[in-house]
Image 1 (tube, helix red, strand yellow):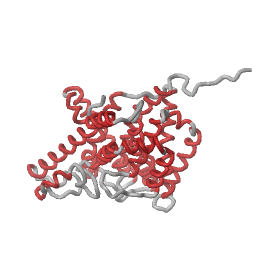
Image 2 (tube, one colour; image 1 turned 90 degrees about the vertical axis):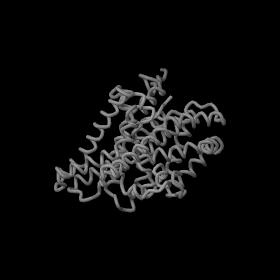
Image 3 (cartoon, rainbow, N blue to C red; image 1 turned 30 degrees about the horizontal axis):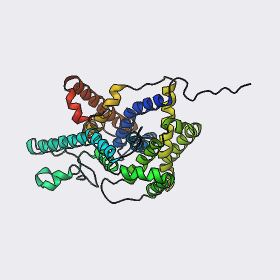
Image 4 (tube, rainbow, N blue to C red; image 1 turned 180 degrees about the horizontal axis):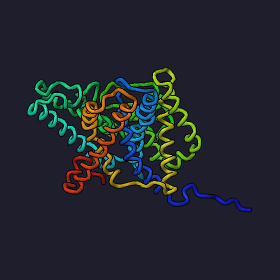
Length: 364
């Protein structure tokens, strides 16, 4: 009797599953970033709320940023036959359109908003975090808005530190490529030790974690591996191990155990997410939505001040005096922010689609 081989992806090719998985994940990963920024440690009410908030904002959502870096590394080298000087320059040109242009736009927008609110309307509370008043700024302060004006080392629109660090990592891709081609296992192992050991270059924008996760994605891409196929190798293990580690990490928050649990959760969380998402896509339970995927960067770049101000406003109507109120003040600002930013993105695409070249970047 012949052995019948059942294909891993019976309904579509591995490349199709991977592409759809990445596209579908773009928006939920941005929601994860908003969950991180929704964390407010001040006066939480109720053990259930504290547990849910810590699990979602401090544990589950935390692998979203590393996952972004990993996917960025994979896509940078995707289907690349060789990495030449001409290839590098072309890649930089494309990343300038997709990363640098929106990075400059949103920080310029923040500077303009900051100046108008303070100097025209004399509003001090609607400002971009703990930054000196604009009337005290020197030329160097305006320039630092694009790099590290907000403590400890964030640009004026502080969520954009990710884009800044990604751009710096992209500049280092010749070194990443050389390390992976010549000594792949040693290169990744060295980066892992640096990341897990908390090594810091002490240079703003040069991020050990960014380089590590970007390089993992680069390794898979350069070696022609499919991310979904690789994650499926430990599918059942990830489905059991990650929930257990996430739960333990949440319950052990503030103890030395999280030193080991949290990094393990980040790595397994990425595998778990790829596995569950790709499985649902393969079973046609979910499918990517172009509007959400294309608008995810807009939500990410525009959410910070809106989320903060909505929360501040709601506090005056919903005093944080009960566990129910804590849940409302935790979730409602996020939901309103997502709804408003998506509505703004829709209006932009409907009436001034050319503006998207600056707000979300041009992607070839």
